[in-house]
Length: 173
Image (cartoon, rainbow, N blue to C red; front, side):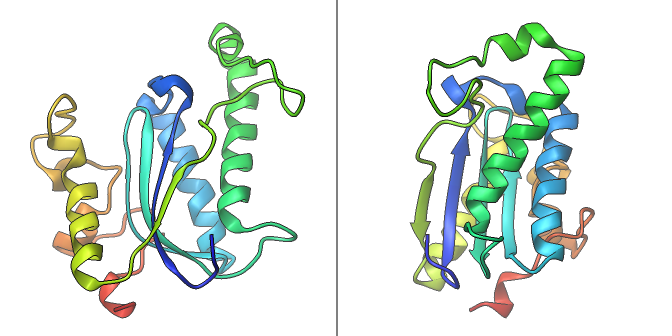
């Protein structure tokens, strides 16, 4: 990923398992994003956290040490999930064991989807997709997109940013 480009980003939990069903892990994802936003490493323009994947519209602003912020995000969330599962649910942790020389556990599938967004039309299409994801098809996680807490839909509807991580997309267009 290139710094200062706008991306639609999708990261999926290994084997599409519903690890992010718990609000505890959704909050962990939010806190990781907030840390990077507060440190001016990223801007988040849109997001949704689903039970087994996340979608973001974001911009990487600066390196986080020697690595790009998306790599830090993936590593940090994995580390905290592992630590939490070790303490609270070791059986679930064992189900994420992998036979890899680089790690003992894996929570995110490799190679998340990352697409540069070039036009306002595509940006708005992706925002609509993100906001409607929780209320479509098999999910039906809320009666309407603005009722789903772990999404930027309410921010774009009412200007409410409960988590303090969002920048309105019109400032980027």
